[in-house]
Length: 228
Length: 398
Image (cartoon, rainbow over all chains, first blue to last red; front, side, top):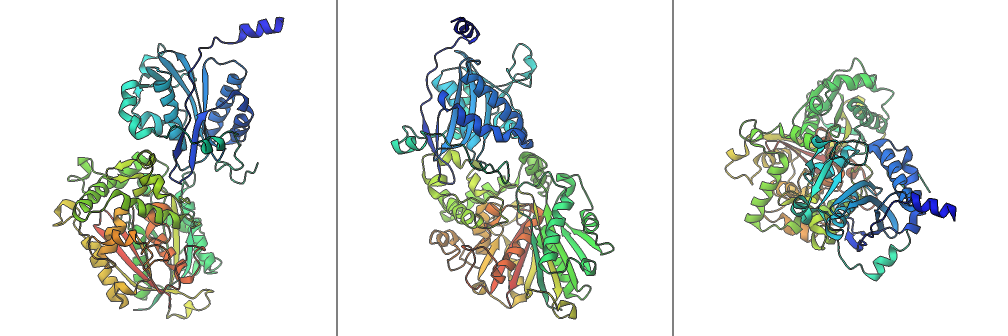
């Protein structure tokens, strides 16, 4: 009982979040990627997917995987407030995932985007889905975003023409490490939405079923020779 | 002139080699070619090394790469020179190598073409490539090669009725070929539904330079390819394990630096003239060609070049693509390697890579599913600038 009371004290206050409606995107390969919100009980598959990437320094996979691991673990064990995890699956296999946090009704905090299947803009689609969730489902006005890799900088800061608010530090600062803070505002989102964000809803029962059970990738293009 | 044959081919897997030194990438392909010819141990008997490279000074902050390659290969004192002709540097290197052998100045020449472009971002790389345009009239106005590709495509569409879906069909064909090519940068097929017809297509296959989309534009690639050329009439040609593939015709031509100085921008005169000269040299005509590698840095160029070299009537090539005539099993397979679109385009290496594909096909060594049935003559067109310096090559099995 005492432990429960302490645990209750330690847990952050939560704001009930609207759930992200699943969608399906046909990738250039013809494969269908279901994008949906991950469930708390799926944490094992999510963490197991990230773990092999801890040693991949190329493209900052190590930093992103380790930080994402802690974010998902924190989400699972109630140490991060209002976090959500979206996952992209192809035939159930995790192709990529994103983490993010609802800070206030007006502000979102984008955490990380990690792509396992490369070459089909899976990460770009998942990042767009994350922004869609923040601005269109949760109704925030803007999202703070940082990049930890050159690829991320190209995909988000440049392609979305994000607003650079790094000069306003420390009043404006992203939660991750003090790196320069960029912002996706609603006008910026409105300007790029149609060319960045896609997906069909509702997802057919067959496609939803394929995504019902998350499967950890058996191979990683980032780790030649890896077999699970 | 002596007959010139190709007795060794080498190729790296195209893609991202940005963590490697350019000299090492070139040396990998060169070693591969020498091994293919069983000549690695005798490499100091090579009479001449020619390297094709477009912009190592910009991309890699490195110059004198031919000298560096010879040293990497432990081939000193073999003479080595660098050839630069924009994205046609590779084929120009072959042409210079051919001239060295045909003239009798050399019996054995190692030709290597390559580029490492991904040490810089795509935007910076695009800017570097654009430096080959006319400085005042084009580059300083903000023009890039994708911009030219987009304008060329728009003009072709308006004149001949080409659609964006036709361009997507080219991508589907070339990705299907590239998916089977062990050297290709992008070894993944794509579907017409996903990149043209489906509800997600406009985002999945986004515009790069309207009306050119991502799947109508080649990737930025690193990589190298190499050939070992021999004088087929010399005693030194004996003893190579594989029968030489003969260079039956090779020629180049130039056009105005400024595209706007051309009477009709859709006419690629340098392509036509280079091809006509190569056909004449080989005593062949377009209908003799069994398959071709055409420089599709932008998909529209595969169509325009195929018309200029006489494979199709002007403005009709995309109708042949719709009918599958340029598929592997079609009447005239084009870009059997995947082309620049799928195999990739390390600018200075592309011309040599095209020649490697001609040799693989003519030897019957292409992978299952993309081997042309009993080809006799293969043609490659390597396109420099926006068509202002072009090399055509014809190889023969006999």
